[in-house]
Image (cartoon, rainbow, N blue to C red; front, side):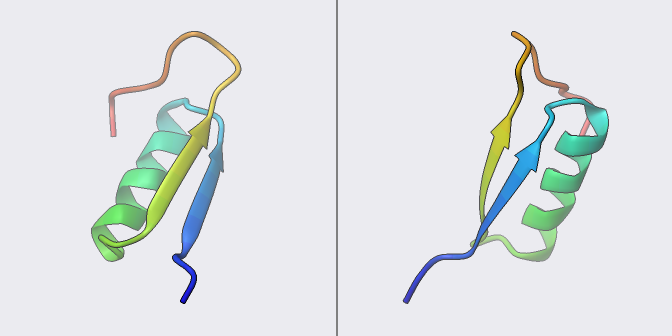
Length: 44
């Protein structure tokens, strides 16, 4: 069985908020976030 994965493009507030919401809805979901800059948002 393959594990579900969510790929988030962009580590800004919107991307991290979407990732956090997805994890709340499906705790076993693997989330991978890609950000081109040196920082990601911690506002989620």
